[in-house]
Length: 254
Ligand SMILES: NC(=O)c1ccc[n+]([C@@H]2O[C@H](COP(=O)([O-])OP(=O)(O)OC[C@H]3O[C@@H](n4cnc5c(N)ncnc54)[C@H](OP(=O)(O)O)[C@@H]3O)[C@@H](O)[C@H]2O)c1
Image 1: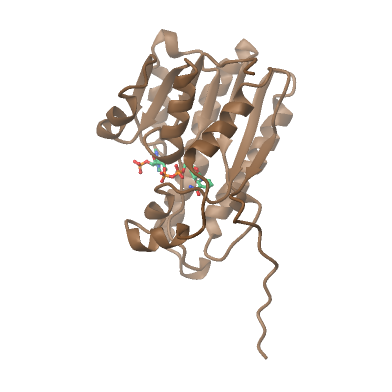
Image 2: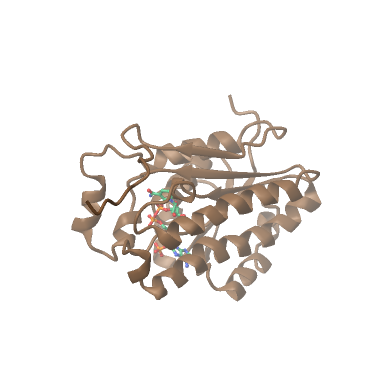
């Protein structure tokens, strides 16, 4: 049974994968939504048919000035954000760290870390003032379990994990909640984007694996966000049944 419902929910990168599923799940519960995407076309596609008041913003979250303008430009009835879902992000490349593209590293840091920080800092001031609010960060199991080729992606999600924890320390007296959601393998455009449009390579990641779907993550976030305000879910790690953390690797020369 739902005992608490956030009135206004901001979802970053609402146009793809998890973001679309979050928008649909919170719209189905009647929440008003602030949705971001990087183009008007992408935004239009998700807004259609949600059936709740939506304020859509086209923004690249790695652009600090643009994120500041987005928050400054929120219409009066969307200003009191009850729930921010820091969803935007992703992985680029799977080369070993010593051969990775520095541009890819830069882009991952810009959105997975800096974009999340800008949105959090700008949303949280009002939450503290109102003594009510919830930041849900979309981390990853890769923040806890390193894997070959994961380098900066894994490190960025480890940042999200530790940032979530430290924010909890600072928010202890404010009634503001912080949750880090750490999914394993979920079939979305994540791998297509990681492999820069190579659909065949992306498909191989999920082939025969029965991965999670975005709705599984949306249901998990919805649960954590609708518990009574006295409850803080610190973190949730979820994986497909077919996935597990591997053993420590040993490279033998003989
Ligand atoms: N799928 C998984 O297996 C998995 C597992 C654990 C965690 N996650 C995390 O879940 C989140 C959502 O991923 P997904 O699976 O839904 O992947 P996705 O379908 O590739 O969606 C990623 C979204 O992030 C947006 N984005 C990327 N850079 C951005 C920027 N600079 N500014 C604004 N938006 C930006 C993309 O926008 P465009 O459409 O414009 O590119 C897209 O909407 C990410 O943080 C990802 O790291 C995914």
